[in-house]
Length: 472
Image (cartoon, rainbow, N blue to C red):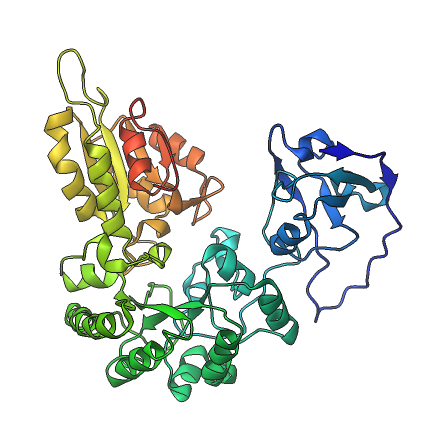
């Protein structure tokens, strides 16, 4: 890498605020990698990267595109003070980046959803929770970067152009129903009727998608579900690579929202059995099973989950499709390396460990831990936390609250420390705006936040034998 002399940045003019435009982008640096180009040229957390090669950036996608040149001009505003901005010329290899992480992957604010779905989680929240849960996002960039689901109803022409220009594929799309009237009714947005038009526009530009159906009894189930699955399958060769079916999630905080109900055991069984029939057909026709009920659907149906090989690419694992099967597979591999209990090699710990979990996953975790308790001398218990905050129909670990943990941990056998899945927290806060450190003080017992993966759990139990990782 070669650097040239620092140059003052050209004057920057701030546009007047317009409520109908996204806010002015700010690429604020959160972290600088040791030994990186950014460290060498003096970038620090809190600085802003104003432009690269004179071009402003709307998001990390722009950054990745612009930084790929061998010769780049980086405009830096120390501490975000643009009146003190300066420019550094950098020579580097094509695959090198500056080595920074930003406070957000979007620099001009998240695109807000224009729909008014009756099952939207934002409408089912209580007051006094973590601020991020009140953001009703529908951002194509987060769909590409993180697998967030979008409806395609709020895309401007400029958004479409950026999708095509950068080849943002795959995107994750909430289908819900292919019947226009049903989809409009679910989204409460007339743009929902243009689903086929939007999908075909994506496919015409070689953009692939993964779709989902949030199954809402009495609205998009029955023959409407059959229609949606069969019509979306016809797009397989065009670019629709998978279709998940997930049960609607309802909390006890619905207030004046229309009455909806959760999926029953029998309805879940019907979906799973139908999906087996569809999968057999699609496997013969397309070489892929295409349609996949979520893990929650199988658990509601009280039917065994398929092995990970039945999910092909596991393309929607972050959507809870094949997650448990992959978890079990990885756990079996890790368990073979766990230390056996013996006088010379005691078990993982001499203390009692409590594994905090939502009620949905608790039986799965218990079945995984039972075989190794005696073998490894492991004193561990799974503690399912009933979700009194949102209501009993909310059973996932990602929505555990500090209030419920605090109230219910005392009902279990006392433990010396607890393991809390990382997906229940964000930057150290639980969803009800309680810090993990505060929860520790309230309980008087240490809490270790571990990645919500097989390796994360194994590391929490056997820190001296298993390396921590968020990805396995």
